[in-house]
Length: 251
Image 1 (cartoon, rainbow, N blue to C red):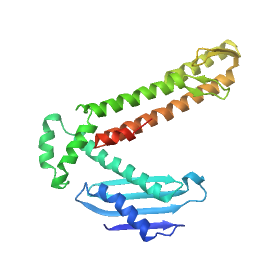
Image 2: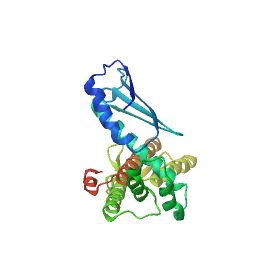
Image 3: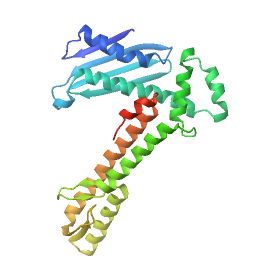
Image 4: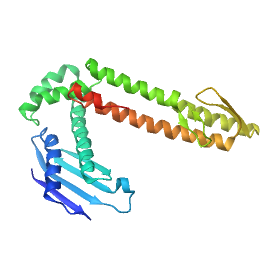
């Protein structure tokens, strides 16, 4: 592998180079026309301790680049995250290619694909199977997607978000929007407080509107985090080849 590694404030040992090459080998095996591969490993002492080790990779293909970066307290863990992210980007290339063609052209596309090695046609078929919405996933993958959606809903409406006042509120997107609109309406009426109902149905009276505004922001922020987590997990499900590995994807 023609891998160029640049380092900042960290010494690249033979073990580190070998580890990174091993992690990237599987990603690079998907493509014939890899032009250059460059990586940066660095330690940024200005970042939080848990994110201090930085790793990034740029894979130059013919007509397409793959870029990924990761941060972690441990450099080897950062390189593992880098492999996962670059693998997801590689599958994303397959997905984009498949989305550009109509369903009746999919078989023809597989036959005509010359950018993949001949023994990677099965990989392309897997990418089609797991990424294209119009094609049903097998039952184990569907069950895992359903599990993620269920946990997403539970996190919003059963667990909710712990507010700065100490009680939990539902954290759906509509809940945040409604609260914000109610605050605006009550402010116009000259009202300074309101009643809130938490996820357990308990009423909290005389909550100042300033606190309610902050709670609406907390709800919106929590919803965004949950949404990003849901999408990341679903992406992991769709990029998992072996159904036995699905058990490792948990909320």
